[in-house]
Amino acid sequence: MLFPFVTLIFTLKFTEMLEIEKKYIVDENKKPVAVQLDIDTFNKIEELIEDYALGKLIEENSPEETLSIAEAKQFYKNLQK
Image (cartoon, rainbow, N blue to C red):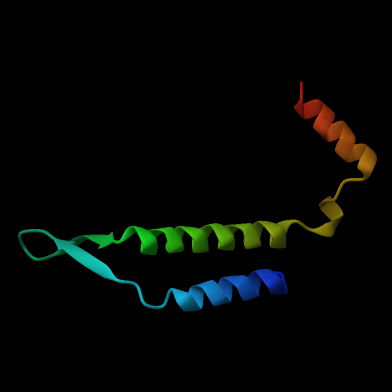
């Protein structure tokens, strides 16, 4: 389960996205081959996906995986090498 605040943010943003203006691009047989979105809609969709991914990352990071201060310092010291 996502943290409540992440779920709330995602839900609120998703609610804003229910109306998606799109134009279908069709081939010579009138078969849809692509969708065209305006840039604002694309940016909103991209933000929703990023927020969802961040929420999943937070959800998957269990408390057992946290580092002590000494472990964190050692971890970051090793990153600099």
